[in-house]
Image (cartoon, rainbow, N blue to C red; front, side, top):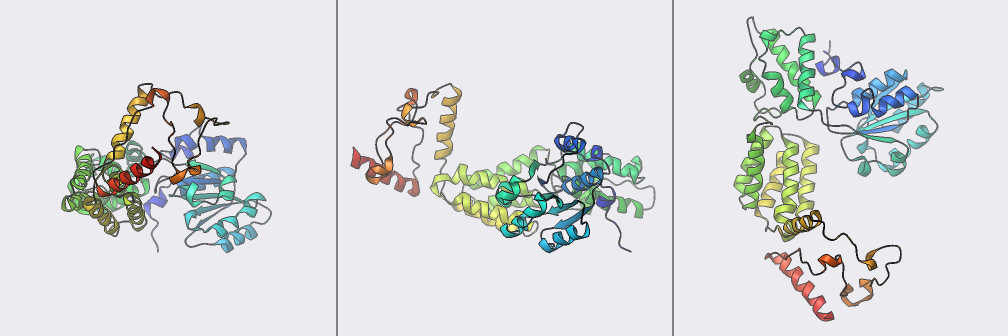
Length: 409
C-alpha cells in the first residue's frame, strides 16, 4: 500500500489554514471576494515553489462546488483538457494546470475557446514570470495573482500545528528544531513539511524517552536545504558578502568556496541573485555580455536544482571572477540618484517633451547618428555622471564616442 505523503495529508482544508497568502485568500483578499460575489474568472498563479498555489486551486474548487482536474503541463496536453471538458459536458470544470510555462504558444492558444465559452475555469500556475512565459491572448483572459514566499513565522506556526495533530509531544522535540526548519525552508512550506515528516518518523521509531535535537537535524539532513547555516544569522550575509568580494577581487578560488558554502546550505536563490548583481555592479561595462551569461547560468541552475545546479553556478562564479572589472555605471547611477533626491532636474527640456518635441533634432538624420543637443534639464545641463573605465572595452567605446563627436565639433 502506497503511503500518502504528509504534505498531502495535512494540506489546508480552509482558506484560513492557507498561510502566507492573506492578500489573496484572507477575509478581505481579492480571490475570496470574487468567490463571495460568485464572479469567478480564470486565473494565473505565479510564485515560488511550496507557497500554496495547488492548495489554493483545490480550495477554490471546493468553495465553488466545482469538479476539478489537476494537470501538469509536462505530463498532460490539450487532449487531456478536451477529455475533461467531455467528461463534464454541460457544467464548468476547474482545470488546474501546473507549470504552464511548459505549454508552447500553440498549446496555450488552444485553451482560449474553452476559457471563453465557460467549458473550463482555468487556473494555471507557474514559478516563472507569466508576462514572459504566458501567451498574451491567454493572459488577457485571466486574472494574474502573485503568491508570496511564506514567512518563517507562518511556516513555524504551521509546523507546530502539524506536530500537535500528529501527537508529537513537546518533550519529544527540541523547541529550536521547528524554527530552524522554518528559517531554512526559505518560504517553501512543502519542503519544510517533507523534512518534518522525516523527523516524525525518526521520533516514532526511537525508544522512549527520546528528544529530537538540532544535532539530530544536522545528521538527518547534513546538506539539506538551509541546514548548513542559519539563514537569519550574520553568517548567511557574510557568505554572500564573501562571494561578492572574492569575485570583485578577481579570486576564483574564494568565489567557488563561498558559493559552495551557500549551495551546501541549500540557498540556490540567494546565490543566483547575488551573481546577477555582481555581473552588472562589478563587471559591468568592462564585459557587457556578463549579465547575459550569468542569467543563463542562474536560470539553468534553477531548472536543474541541486546538486547539478552547482555546475552552471560554478561556471558563472569563475567567469565573473576572471572577467575584467568596472563599476563605472554603478557609480554614475549613484550620482544621478543623489541629484534627483536633492530636487535637481525637475524640468525636462521642451524639445524632449511630447506631443510636439519642438526643436528636437533626430540623430539618425546626421552623420554617425549624432548631433550636439541638450538632454539633461537646465539645472544639470553640463553635468557629467558617467566616466569611462580604464578597461579595454570602455576605452574602445570612449575612442569611438570621441571620434563621432569630434567630426561634428
